[in-house]
Length: 115
Ligand code: HEC
Image (cartoon, rainbow, N blue to C red; front, side):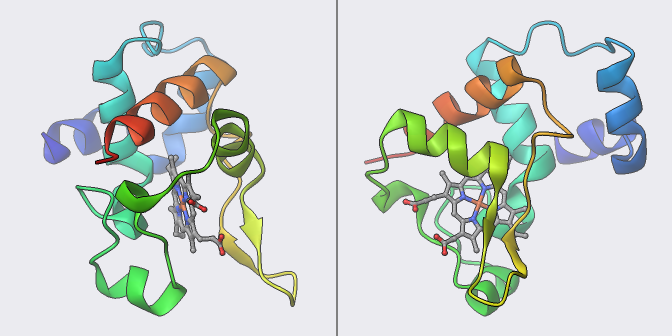
């Protein structure tokens, strides 16, 4: 599935596709939350959200299955990202890449990863 997503939307074209209205109209379904997670979040959070990737260890990514963050803060984290104390990105902001409905879809998917 990863390769299908990658073929469909090379990262640099994503913004253009989103701005153009693209083919993400069904972003509210859980299925596309999964697809969005696969496309944008797996490199750091891992396919199961457990952050067992080399990048994750380096960055100190949190295990999403252990997260108890309330909905509004999940949305905020994805929208605004998170900077470290030196102002460097720990997690990038996704407000320029994802529409609000897509952020909600991927937030719902993140919650579904919890135990
Ligand atoms: C560049 C790596 C990176 C990417 C890409 C990334 N994250 Fe993160 N994420 C992090 C790091 C690092 C943290 C921990 C930040 C902190 O609180 O110090 C984090 C934390 C989170 C948290 C908060 C968990 C908690 O309990 O505090 C959520 C929710 C989250 N990420 C969701 C996502 C989603 C959804 C995506 C994709 C749209 C995503 N992340 C993409 C690195 C990343």
